[in-house]
Length: 152
Image 1 (cartoon, rainbow, N blue to C red):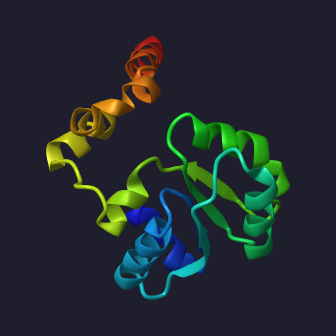
Image 2: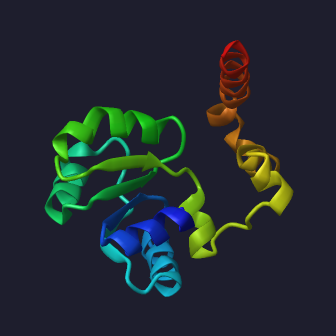
Image 3: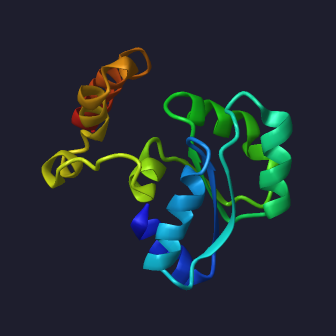
């Protein structure tokens, strides 16, 4: 996300941070602005993944170029698939999971090695075992991605 924010600032693109607990998106936006002073934040909103009637108009009105959605997997991906056509100004929408929590300082980031090998989800699961129901599909997803890469 930090590299995306740097690129957005460089190219004059705006971000909208959607999701996470109340106040988290605002704190994450402040962190991104401090790291990238030229970054334009079109808006932030905690919202709910199931409340399209409230969320979609806010995003549409803000007209961001890039939408970062932090509703957790798979709700954020479902939200994007269901609503991307309803926010026509958005060029790119990305599910960012717990990244806003890290930027806001509300969660402890994983060690560098865990991040480098892409196992942040496992780090969060170990630290918060209540997440197991939502994350139980991730190992299967990782295996499917690996198999697809091996077939190429």
